Image (tube, rainbow, N blue to C red):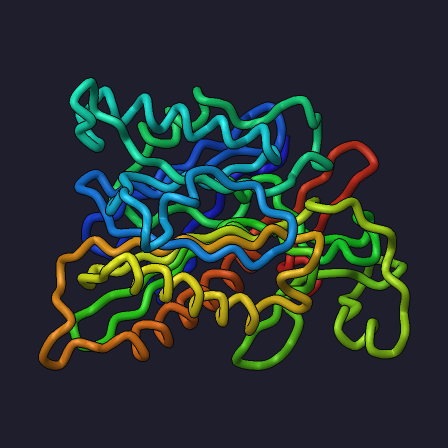
Length: 338
C-alpha cells in the first residue's frame, strides 16, 4: 500500500494559522482515497466560486449573498467523485453530537458545504469516502499544521492527465498562509488538475504530463501550442478543490468575492486550468476575529493574499506528494523527476 501522508513543508505556514480553523484528514487504508474537513466550530461567514465546468458540490447555493444562511460550520473536501459527497453526512453527525450548528428549533443543524474530486482510476474504484470517513476526519481535526501530499482528499489525486493517465503524476494536498498587518489568509488545496502545476516564481513546470517515455516533463502549454493533440477525456475526471480562510470580518458578499479572486492563484499555478473536465471549486471562510479598520488590509490586499496563498498551497501539494505504484500503474511525484 502506498504512503498516505508526508510532513508539512516548512516555512510557508498553513490554513490553521487562521484563528478558529481546524483541519482533519481521513486517508483510506484500502486504496489511495480519502477526505479532508476544514472546521469552523464557532461558525464562519462563507462564500464559494466554481470555475470548472464539471463540478461535484453540495450546499453551495446557500452561500449566495442573497440566501438566508449566514455562517457555515465546516467544509468537506473528498475524493470518490459524487459518491464522496456522503462524507459531509459524517461531518454533520460529528458536529451535531457536539451541539455545533444552526438552531432550527427542532434540532441543531450543522451547515457543511462540500466538493469532490475524481480519483477513481487510482486503485479499486468501489472504495469511496463515506459518512464514516467524514466523521473520522472530524475526529482527527486539530489546530496543528495539517499533513500534506498523499493524504485526505489528496490521497488519490493526480495531475497532468491531458495526454493520458499513463503519463500523469501524483497530486495531493498542500497548505500555506500569508499575514499582512495583523490579518492572516490561509489556503488548503487538493490538487487533482488536468493540467500541469507551475511554480509562479520561476514559470517552470513542477509536475504534470510526462513525455512518452515517462522520463521528463512534457510542458502541456507548449505541447498544445505546437499542435500536439490531447487524448479524449471523460468529463469531470479531474478537479482542484480548496478552501481559503481569513480571520478578518467579512460579509457574505465579501467572502464570495474573496473566493472568486482566490482563483487567480490557481490560474498562476495550473495550466490549463478551469477546463471542461475540471470542477475547480474554492470556498472562502471568514472567522471574524479581526476588523478591517485602521492599518488592516482592505479587500484588494486580501484578494492578493488569497491568490498568493492558493498558488503556494497548490505548488506545495505536488512537491509534498509521493509516488504511487498500483499493479502496472505508476504515478511518479515531482521529487522523482527533479
